[in-house]
Image (cartoon, rainbow, N blue to C red; front, side, top):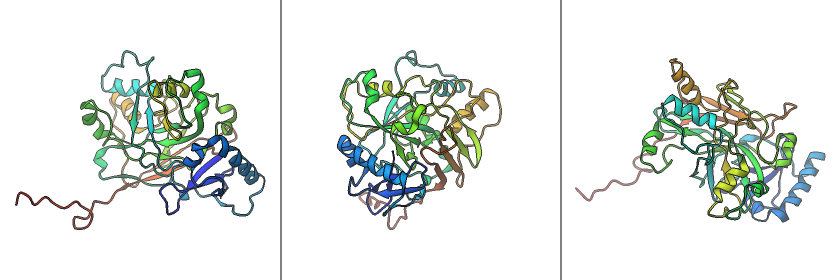
Length: 342
């Protein structure tokens, strides 16, 4: 089934079931008010949502409305935990090669992962906000999984059973802020903007043969200003599959229902399928002594989607414009100045 969170006057939106063709939706307050509440009691709630989904696909009835991605928040507008991996080694290798840095000695055995901000995610059509183009605004197209409760120490062969939903993500990076931040040795804070997610999250069965229980076996299509940046295949060159990533995250602690785990930037060996971020393209240009493609500028448009074998969108499209976020007005929004030294 396909689920979305529709914008309303609350922080978490209203849970909706969306038809397979992404043409209709229906609010399901009578079943669960929010996606998090559904995840909290998934074994009881999911069959009811499936029944409503089947009804909607057969014939949109009373309460159904035309589905518009612009009305969507992120499927989970805020989450208890956001874990970001870097599961595609061609991405890591290329960026490190461009800056003449070696790969970590255990890069093929131990996944890279950090815990990011999850107090708010943004919808597929919400803008990418930055105060300055000098921050180096970049997209990162990836696949994310939404989990049920995961026990500490779960084994790889069981971890895949905890995946409840999948979605696409644009994990925006502010590239020019990252080097100084990482040099402190303590991870990302300022170098990451709000993460956007596809209009809908889907249960694994919606992917059919494109889901093998570990990886998504379809390309992700990435465009900037209607120019194709790349369409790397999500199933190829994923060094650490989702069950392995989940087991790594839960090695010493349990994960709560609604935890979201991202794959990291999709990337294929040789990069003939293009790129899912501008940093990779710039790395190739650096190695070939070519002029560098600029990072995103205000007014640029980013589109990320995945199509099934028949050309139908699976998750809907992430479709964002880069904008300058407003500077706080000194008299109203800014914190008062400290007059203690006057």
